[in-house]
Structure formats: C-alpha cells, structure tokens
Amino acid sequence: MATSQADVIIVGAGNAAFCAALAAQEQGASVLMLEAAPEEETGGNSRFTAGSVRVVYNGVDDIKRLVPDLTEQEIATTDFGTYTREQFFDDMARVTQNRADPDLVELLVTRSFDTFCWMRDKGVRFIPIYGRQAFKIEGKFKFWGGLTVEAVGGGPGLIKMLTDAATKRGIEIRYSTRALSLLYDGVRVGGVRIRQDGVENELRSKSVVLACGGFESNSEWRTRYLGPGWDLAKVRGTRFNTGDGIRMALEIGASPCGNWSGCHAVQWEMNAPEFGDLAVGDQFQKHSYPFAILVNATGKRFVDEGADFRNYTYAKYGRVVLEQPGQFAWQIFDQKVKHLQRDEYKIRQITKVAANTIEEFAHKLDGVNAEQFLKTITEYNKAVRRDIAFNPNIKDGRRTERLAINKSNWANTIDQPPFEGYAVTCGLTFTFGGVRITAKGEVLNTDYQPIRGLYAAGELVGGLFYFNYPGGSGLTSGAVFGRIAGASAARAGKN
Image 1 (tube, helix red, strand yellow):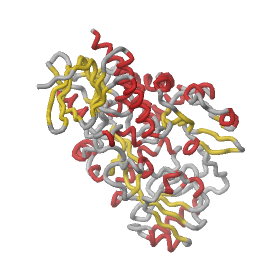
Image 2 (cartoon, one colour; image 1 turned 90 degrees about the horizontal axis):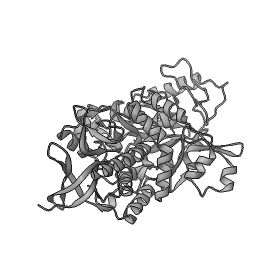
Image 3 (cartoon, rainbow, N blue to C red; image 1 turned 90 degrees about the vertical axis):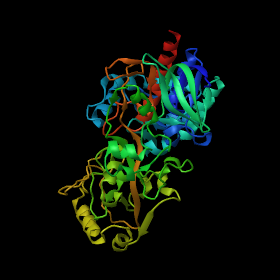
C-alpha cells in the first residue's frame, strides 16, 4: 500500500481547513490538504457564503487594521460604530439561548479580531459591507448588527485568497480525494485512508485535522437527526458535506456534542436546485423579509418577521418555512419598502409575481388561499401602529397590535401598488451537531480524554451554535478554531 508522509493532514479545503493548514505550516510542519470535491467545486461551504465575518472591534482604528486601504473619504462618510466583546458575548448568549459552550464562545469572541488580522497578514483582504449592512442616514453610512467587514470577492474571493496563500507557502492540496477513515492504532491517529480516482490508499501523518463540514448534504442523516421533512430541504452550499469527518471521528470513539437536531436554515428561492449553484452563490437567499410579511399556503402569517435584526433571525426562519404546508411561503412587499430590498431580489432565477391591485395579486400567489390572504392583509393593515415612525436602521418598535402573531418592528401597511411576492422554501446552510473539542482543538473521546493526534475545526465542531447563530460567526468560528487546531496539530507532531 502506498504511503505519503506529511506532518499534518488536513481533511477539507474550506475556510477552517485553510486556516488550520496555514497555522500548521507557520509552526514548521509539512502540510497536506485533502479535498473530496474536484478543484472547480473546492472551498466547501465557505465558497458559497457572502464572505461576511463577525469580529470584535472598538472603532475605526480597528477597522483600518483589517482594511488598511480604507480611504479618507470612506472614513469621513461612515459611522463604523463599535462591536465590543460584551456585545458579541451577549449576541451568542441570546441567540443560542445560553446553551453554547462558554469556553468555545470565549475563544470565538476574544480571538476574532486577532485571527482576522493574522489572515490579513497571510494575504486575505477585507472591505466594509456597504451593500448589505449599512444604511445612509443624514449623509453618513451607519453600520448595524455587528457585521461590518467581508472578504473581498465574497466566499469565492475568500477561498481564492486562502488557496493562493497556501500554495505560495508550499502546502499541497489534493482534489477529488475523499477521506474514508482514520488510521488509528488505539493509541493515536496516524493518518487517513482515502479514495482517489476510484483507488483506495493510506496516507500517513503525525496528526490529522478534520475540517470538512457538517452533514447537511446527507439527506439520510438530515432525516435521522434533524427530523422528518428535512430530506425535503434544499442545500445552500456544497454537495460534498456529507458528514464524513464526523463519522470518521465517531468510529474511533469521539464524543458527539452539540445541537444534533439543529441547523442554520434560511429562506431560499423555492425553485432553487437541490444543492448550491456556484454561479448564483448565495443570491438564492431572500433576506429582506423584516420589511415584508410572510404568508403560507393557508393565506395566513405564521412568524414575527420583525422580531429582531435579520442577522439574528435569518438562520432559524428557514426551519419555520419548512414546517409550513407544502414547505413554502411567500414574502409580500409593497412599493413603500421596495427600495430596501437587497440585491438578491434582482436575479433572473427567481419565483416572483406582481400586480397593481391586491385582489389580482392574491390570485397570482401560487398555492395560496386567496380569500384568506385578502382577509390577512386587511387585518394586518388595521393593526399597524402608524403613529410610530418607521426606521430600518434600528428596532423601531413600529408594530402591530391585537393580531394572533404580531410584528414587533418595521410594520408598514401593505397598500401601495404594485405589490410583489417572492416564493421561498428552506435552504439549509450547515448542521450544528458535531464532535467535542478542547480549547486546543483536540477531539475528545467518550471518556472526555483527548484522542491523540486528532483535531477538529469548523462546522463539524459541536457545542457552539444552538437553535440559531449570529450572522457571520460561522466563518469566524472556522478561522479561529482552524488556526488553533492547525497550530496544536503541528506542535503535537514535534513531540
């Protein structure tokens, strides 16, 4: 059997995997990356993201460290505000209902800024997210919700910059190479069994970092762990995240951890393909719903669209849509809020209807009870507190009253034609269940002891996200824990 020697083998080639590889190489280790996807589909879920990262910063000087080429004009016309450690901790506690592992959360929050500065030094460039996270108020852009910077070129740009950084440093990446099992002698992990071009082989190493995503693209596991109906969800990202890293770890006694019945799931174009489309990227998402209302097949609202900023509700509302009759809903806008729609509402691959009268519109909403829909609109319009000013930049308290499900913020009457409807279903991003790790990125066994030579990072780590997650913290988690796991794996190989 052929063997290949590297100090550290990284399974995966997304954001977490590259951060692990770069950190291991920095420690002097030789590094080999194994990617199941062919080169044209590489990058895991990271490549499908918008590239936004949630990072602690205390003002414009910190932003300038992440974005050194920020112009004087941009600084003068932008209120970057701050996003403090306390705010990040509070957001994590709130959206995960205080269930997240405090040690992992502490690392995520306190290492976020330092880790992105480190990536910047490696050649990853960031820019402010003017297009999606800032509104102009009195001539100044104002950022909100804790998301302020993104990778240049979004997810595809992030993967290209990371790939360039890795190859420049002599890190080998093998594409179309699927990891099948870990080489484990009962004492330590010493490599990976792989399949490449239909042939199985063993690759030896001093340690292994698993960074190959969750199990969202495995319809059988989705149904087993997330529950009935989840086999019907669309997958936003790569078709290659089938839970292999988690399975391989569990097979040698790793401790499962986290919210195995939970996932990040958003509202997604109803007629999108089964898996993500790299040409469209994340544009199938439909995230302007806080300014709209959502109705299901019965013609009724079923969720508080304005419960919080989009960043804190979008990752859980996909599940709510999946639970509706027929697994779909329609987002309803009128012309008052049309200008607030994000760019993804302009793409060609969209299921959209429009009409100049609400009656005609009601009958165009495919699959919806038109009579009940008209009743819903009438009741909703009556319930809007018009005496409270509408402000899309803050939780404005402009709400409805005395409805079965009230809208807490950004409630506007729907009465200004033409009316527009967008059909959405559930788009699954990543699963929350995974393996248990230490603060050094070591994978623990079911006796809560480290499995020597085995490390993990990214979406296959359990214990960080429960029920929901704050937008942009997935890439932050991959970067922070990838860097930790890679450095630990390299250091362990020297012992």
